[in-house]
Image (cartoon, rainbow over all chains, first blue to last red; front, side, top):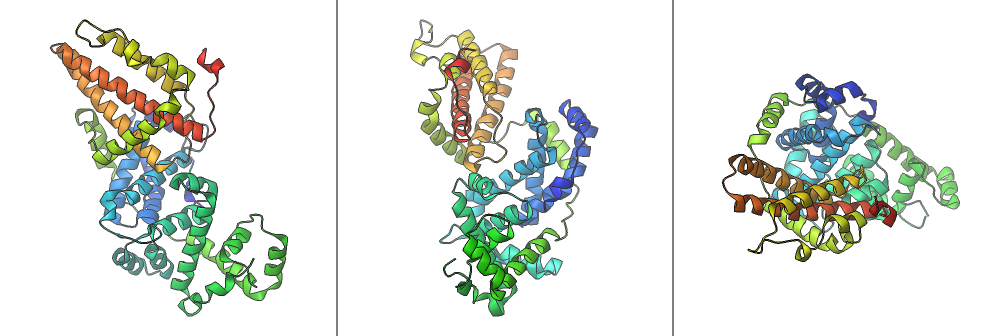
Length: 193
Length: 214
């Protein structure tokens, strides 16, 4: 599950950071930079863009510390900001010229996907990176970060059934990429039930 | 007839599915294998190694230090999003009791002989709008991206205006310019309230007349 759930940021750090204490602000960054960057890499993929987004995320975190009331997990609050920044980037016109738009609003970046998968030597990484951004985001947010379909629906301003069907389509694509010899038989599992 | 992928994912996630489907999956070797594969894939994704970010703190600290002197860049896409959203929700927002109190129609605002709203009234109106905004519930943990973009854009614009207002107030040289800036600030706060209120209502918030009387 999400690595964010394991991160405990002491409330004292948050209190001090809110007063402008640079040491506390840096400690918060140090505690959360890795999971934030990892999440962004999973959703956005491109390292250079992710580095820019990490900066945007922490600038917003520090700017809006006053609006965190301590009612939930601080790391979870930071994660929600990171997810929002990532999705805003992926849906922005600036990003649209980098990737192609297909019938399901999918945005794919095969070149980057290939590089990333090879760099880390994993078929799964390569398959994930090759997914359209919508499917990749939904798979990661649902299966790893533990978002519910209702929460994903809110993020994308769509219905929960949209989230479910996109998740299934993304899994179908993952299966085809990871097990090409049986990938084409998926439809036999899509009959009546 | 085998279970659909969507149904198998629901089973994997312990979500409710039809009893007959669950029974079929339990008895069908092919569906059971697919369910195990989906479960294993989720575990494999969760155990993928983390990425190590380069050292970005110095850049963040520098940008934060420079922020007051460098107003945020205004993005035309965000202006359009904010404008259209604000227009859509303004009628809805007008039903909020505190909003009605805080934002009398421009036509009933007192005006100078030249037809401008006096500066003191604009400042007061701005303060009342901010107080009204504070009464809205905290933003939902999971927000619609379009709303967030509009809210970010409006807040950035207000911050930029505040920098300009602070500069003009210190110089105290151009009263008309200051009046114009405060007028823009009121308009932006109106729009911000509209978007925030619509978002809150969408998340189940209901304002009552009792709240309006506070």
